[in-house]
Amino acid sequence: MNEKMDYGQSIFQAGMTDPASIIASVTERMLVTRPRYKMVLRPFMEQPIKQNTALGPYATDFNLCWPDAVKGSIAYAAARFYAMREQNVIITVSGSTKLWFNGLIHTEKQTISLKMKQGWNELLLKCIKTPTRWGFDLTIAFPRYPSMWAKDYLFSTRPTFPQPALHGEEGFAYKPA
Image 1 (cartoon, rainbow, N blue to C red):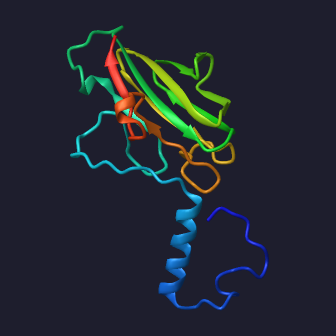
Image 2: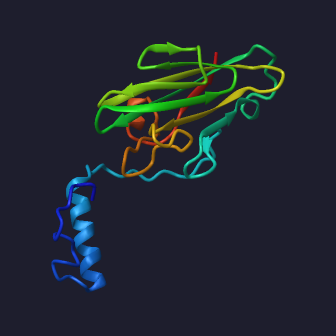
């Protein structure tokens, strides 16, 4: 679907006007251009790190996980992100955090411009409990739309568990220090 289409090569211009045929053609083309993954069904479980809106940040409040934690407590969150190609991105993170991306620490700013490498990229967040918050908001965005999660035809990525047994499944691993 993201391939270049030359002028005069649209489905309509090729004479296809029946909605069922158009849907079948688009679906077939999509299946050819997208990688196929084995689907695993699991029961739904409420996750403390989640995206509340489709294009918004992933957010968490570790106070919900560990309500008795004291000021200065530390929790870590980790995820892997897949990039189909090398891509410049904007990472925005808020909260009392330290962020490592592909092994490099980024503590100086809330908004970081960096390059995701093609393939798997690793993210680690260290969150420190303060009197006002213990958690983070995280957005990985395409540079043209820095406040929207990268989920479109320009570039799309999502957090997946770092554990090999959960390869490709959406989510973050997290634990207290």
